[in-house]
Image 1 (cartoon, helix red, strand yellow):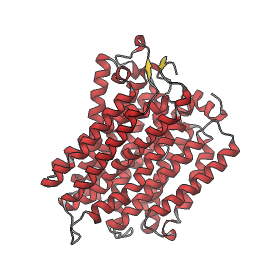
Image 2 (cartoon, helix red, strand yellow):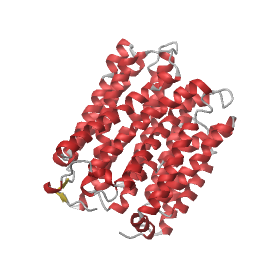
Image 3 (cartoon, one colour):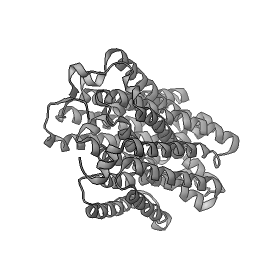
Image 4 (cartoon, one colour):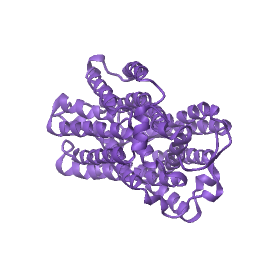
Length: 474
C-alpha cells in the first residue's frame, strides 16, 4: 500500500487483535441475521404486506447509508475521523451504539408499535455502520495487502457462524421460548432476547477495551480530504458491486422462509423453515472458512487442498449438529460443497477470478429457483449461500486495493453501498406483492450479473493483486 502508516505494535501481536475482532464479527453476524427471523414474525404480528415487512431491512440497512454518508461528509470537509481517533475508539463507539439499538427493542416490544421496532433497528444499524467502516478496514491492515482477502474471509467466516446459529437460537427464542402459552405471537417475545444481545455486545466491547490493539495512522501530512478517492475506477465499480451483493444476499435470506412456505415449493411452517434458513447462512460459513485457506498465498497447493477438504467436512459436520434436520434432509448440500471446492480450484486463489466464478454459479441457481418447483427450487435457493461466501470480502478488498491515504474514506463509501440491503429487499417485496414470491428473484439475479462484470473487470485491471495471489508471492 502507498499509505505510510505509523504502527505502535509489532506484527507479532497481530494474532491477538485478529482473534478479538473475530469475536466481534461473530456477534455482529448473529444480530444481523435476526432480521430474517423478525420479518415473518412481525409480518404476522402486525398483519403486514411483503412490502411493509421489508421495512425491517430498509430501516436496518438504510442506517448504513445514512451513517456512512455522515462519515463521508465529515471526511470530505475535515479529514478522515478514524485516522484521527484511531480504529479502537471507532470500534468501541460502534459497539456501544449497537447495544443502545438492542435496548430500544424493550420499549418497542412493551408498547407493541411497529415504527418503534423500525427505529430500534435503525439505531442498531448505525452502530454496525461504524463497525463496518472500522473493523473491516482494520482487518485488512493486519498484514500484507495481497493476503487481505484471506484474513477478511476468515473473520467473515465467524460472522457467518453467527448468521448460521441465529435462525436456530433466535427462532427458538422468538417463535417458541418467549411466545405466548397458546403459541400465538406477542411483541414481548423480542424484549428479553435483544436485551441479552445488547449485554453481550457490551461484554465484547469491554474485552476489546482491555486488549492492546495495534494502532495504524497515516502520517499527518497524508490525511485525505476532498473527493480524490473517486478517481479510482475499481472503487467506483466496487461500490455498485457491493450494493448489488448485499442487496441480493439480504433479499434472498429475507424471502427464504416465505419461499419455502409456498405450497408449490415445500409448504413448510416457520418453525421448520428456520432450520433451512440456517443452512443457507451455514453455506456462507463453509465457503468463507474454505476461502480463507484458498486465498492464503503462503500455503502450498497440496496443503491447501488437504486443509480445504478437512475444513469443509468439519464445518458441514458442525452445521449438521446445529440444525434440527436429519442427514437425509441436508445431504443434498454435499453437492454444493463439492461444486464450491471446484470453484475455488478454478479460481486459483485469485480474488477477482473466484468472484466471477461464484457469481456465475449464483446466476444459474437463481434461474433454477424461478423456473423450477418443489425440492429442486428449494435446493437451488439454499445453495446460493455457499457461493455468496467470499463475495463481500473479495469485493471489499479489491475495491480498496491501492487506495493509499484514501483507504478509510473508500471504506466509508463501500459501507454506504450496503444501502443495497435496504433498497433491494424492499423492491423485491413490492415485486412479490405483484407477481408472487417465486418470480421476484429476478431482481437478485440481475445483481449477480453485475458482480460477475466486476470480477471480470478487476481480473483485467488489478493484475498485480491477481498475480501475487496466484503465484503465492508478496
